[in-house]
Length: 233
Image 1: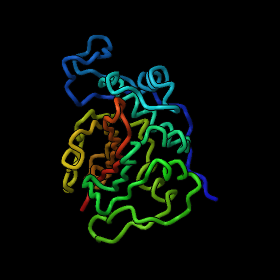
Image 2: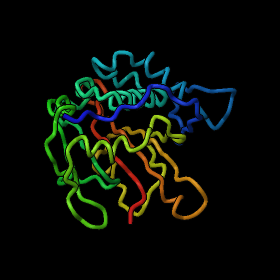
Image 3: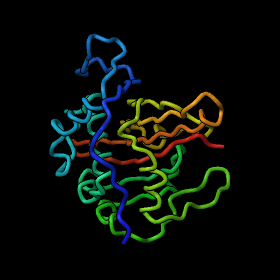
Image 4: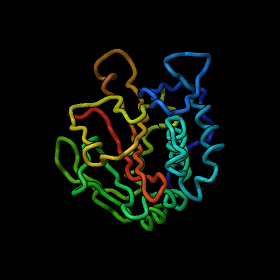
């Protein structure tokens, strides 16, 4: 049985930029009085374990989640995915709706794969082939096992090291329709963005993002969406 790829726990002490203006009631974490609100990934890592140390048991109360805490929660979800701890991940999946996996910025509930809480808990040992959505350009179905899908659309890059983190804001788009808030009107989402490298066009188009969407239910914030975004043709 194939095991999911796992990466080391060491995170680079890189700067992470907030791309969302804070809500008036949000408690901000400021470093050196910088108005642009630049926070290191290591700070979020530490926050994730101090504030959401119980993440493997249950999601946080929706009343306790501000911008910084929402970002820390998203980092904790990344940690669970990297560790292959799908049982713990299932405990914060939406109890009724489950989690939608979208391989593109255009969420299509009719074709994107949605897993229930029970199915998510079993993903680590699931070797079945599923249709996860439609390939951009060709229109062909994305037929993959969970291991194959996560390798290409979730863990292709270490998004915990993303230099740009957007809060409830799309950081970068290709030419695909962005409809996350149309499909999930009440969603709160974090986008981990990895820019393309270099100055030539080919390199600049090599960017990708991973978005984690959360919705309130029964007084808590639950994971409802894992979305992959990159340049599309």
